[in-house]
Amino acid sequence: MKMNNVIPFFAVFPLILMGCTQDEVIKEDTSVGGKEKISVTVTQGGAITRISHEDDGANGLILKWTANDAFKLYGTTTEVFTTTGPTDGDGKIATFTGNAVEDAQHAFFPASKAEKRWEDCYFNVIGQVIDANAPFAHLSGYNFMTAQTTASGTEISEISFKHKIAVLKFEVTLPDGIVPKYITLSTQDDAGIAISQKASDESNVTTVKQLTAAISGASSENFTAYMAILPSTLKEKLALAVTGDDGMVYSYTVSFNGDFPYEAGKVYNSELTFGGIEGGYGTAAIFDNDVIGNTWDQSDNKGSTKDNPYLIESAGHLKYLIEQVEAGEHYVDKFFKLTTDIKVTADTWTPIGISYANPFSGNFDGGGHTISGELKGSFSDDLQNFGFFGYLTTTSSMLIENIHIAANITWSFASPEGTSYANLGVGGVIGNGHAQTMTVHNCTMSGEMQISDGSLGYGFLHIGSIVGNIAANIRNCSSIGKINVGCKGGIIYIGGIVGGNNSTANETEHCINTSSITLSNTERSNTNYAVSVGGIGGYLIGKVLGCCNQGSITGHSLSSVDIGGIGGLTELVKCHLSRNLTTDFNVTSEETVRLGYLIGHLKSSTVYSCNESVGKQTKWIGSDPAWTPTLDDENEH
Image (cartoon, rainbow, N blue to C red; front, side, top):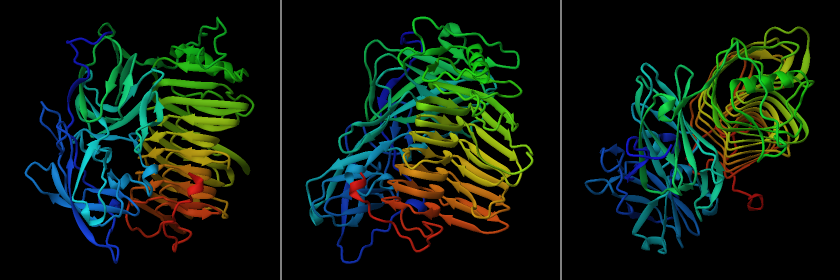
């Protein structure tokens, strides 16, 4: 369907973006002895970029500087400058105060997301949560701006910033009585959607086929949503999918005549009323108790390469894949691609790959599509790992990417008898997975997880929004749901992204968690380990790079518990350029609680250049209360 005047998709307005209000967790004390304080007049440069968080309906977003806005200035030294309020009537210009910087060259806003070194700074737009009652408030965390200056020391008097993001504004009407929960952009363009860019040269660090934001507090089928995106150019088409509280996915696809660029500093507006398929709209295919498996097209050497995959075009195709894997067909080195949204309404879910004996061993591209509804299951001798995928393994390489799980996950570990040292996993995307080289890329989870039951001494339990237990590279994944855990086992690891990533050769990179984790009387029998809970991972090995946690961890444990903003327990880890932006950790225990705002229990690991701009906190490392932020090892960049 071509763009037309009936549905004004992406009408362009000036971006008059946002001044940022930051909470006390991310303020930085810049009073360093012996350095001279200076004041700098700062503007949000450009005719199209005034500042505030108001939508005037005609000209876009009006954006004003607010008290405690802060940027980082880079030169021979680095310092954070903070404002106490605007200096003119409309808030476009403000005075910031900080310590003098010699040979200053670059400035980065907001300081809360600035790194120690200018060359490590980047923009990242995953993990957005939109409040329906204040739909542009979250943009304060994504209003990236940079500036250049050639002045030095006390000679710096003025800095003019330039915006580095664009904003998509959606005015959406769902069918009567349907309230939105998530909104997803997806494209099949080779270029993809840019979600991470380097600040130094604005080159793309990561492009993906989908970008998902959660919507909280919605109470009507009519809503407005603002989504921050990075400048990029699409050439073919863009799909917009909204997941409603009925579990249905409502989608619309727009095609472009030629290149369609998103430019920094602009708002792109669309008004969409979801109707029938004749209007270019679609809804998810239904996977119910009665769905019948039917084979996909297997002609022309299909499935042999990433560019010529088996296409999963219906719920029947997905059912057939599940049945074939359960029957012993592993699809080693084959390629699959999902081409439709699917809502699961079946009473129970059989994952793709049910066990070590019957695993899935192929590659799977979700195509930016959404799995919604309910995934329900219970532990048995035949089914011990659970998620959209249950058990994955291969002796070669494997890639799982571009899938959004909006379904709620309900899993019971039941009451198995005896003692077991098996690693068991539950995840929104993958329960358990091991390969010679495995990568989980650009997957999102926005559903709720409810994990219960189990037996003391039976199994090492791994629970994560994206992945339960795995040895893999996990890159650019995000979680924006809820995790409720009330189970027992030999060992328990719980993470906002991954329960346990278990190989020194693997990396957990640029993942963002905003999911809340709630413990309900968790209990473990192995007293050598506490229940380990982390905003990114419960148990982490290998490299952790550029990850961010904003999710809370609360509740009660019957056993000792280690809590960390990034990792509950890290072993042989190099944690670099990662940050935790919350102190909302309120866990009680019948035994002990060890809390670290970065890591709960640090074993044979190195942490450097983390939480550079989030200010002074105590309890960075729960197992080492005397630890203070460490400078980076430049050899590790």
